[in-house]
Amino acid sequence: MAFPPRPPRGAFNPRFKKEQQQEHRTNYMIKVPEVRLVGENIEPGIYPTPDALKIAQSQELDLVEISPGANPPVCKIIDYNKFLYEEKKKKKEMKAKAKTSEVKEIRFTPNTDDHDFEFKVKHAEKFLMDGDKVKAHVQFKGRAIMFKERGELLLLKFADRLKEVGALEGMPKMEGKRMLVMFAPKAQQNKKKSSDLGKLVEKKTIEDIKDQTPPTTEQQ
Image 1 (cartoon, helix red, strand yellow):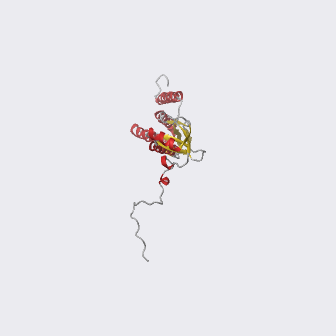
Image 2: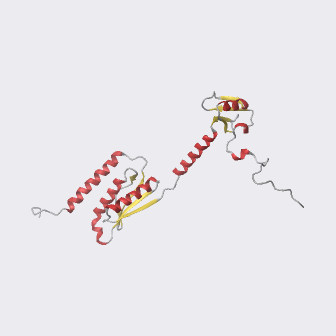
Image 3: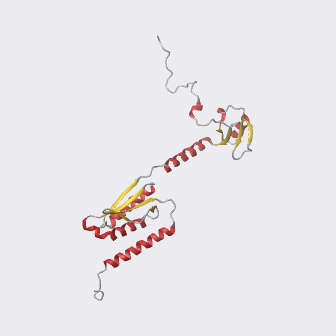
């Protein structure tokens, strides 16, 4: 039995409704006899649908059904393409905010040099700006455990450098043979707290210098 030839791809299919392509009914897709108009540059109220369409056409905009379940359905006169763009933008922003936060780890040693320190600061800043948490720790091996103060100073200095983008969740603490701190992405940080952190780093630096200064003859 011979079958009729298939229509070519892309040919018009009368059973396919344009309404299926849109989330909202617009303009001549709105078949109800009357609608309630809301929004700017119009007198809110109930209008016959043909009159509402004429108002939309006079403003070179679209009549968009936003609450089809209401009686009568609620419509707004807006630029539909612009409306769709704004909706897509909002959904994208909400999705970005809902991103699951990860914990990124930054590792130091008591003898981390300035170049390596700056490199790690830049990585930590990027992690925090992307919405991730940062765990920084100083690893002590063997006799290096004698220099815990140096590790604490290093982490406080690190915290001071990150104060614009990260919130310190607590002071450095020891866990086994490493000292660690945790940073959360900064939402709104109290400026006084950031200033106090800078003073604490400065104080620890002065104390560290004093501890490392050899005693004079009189002190001996």
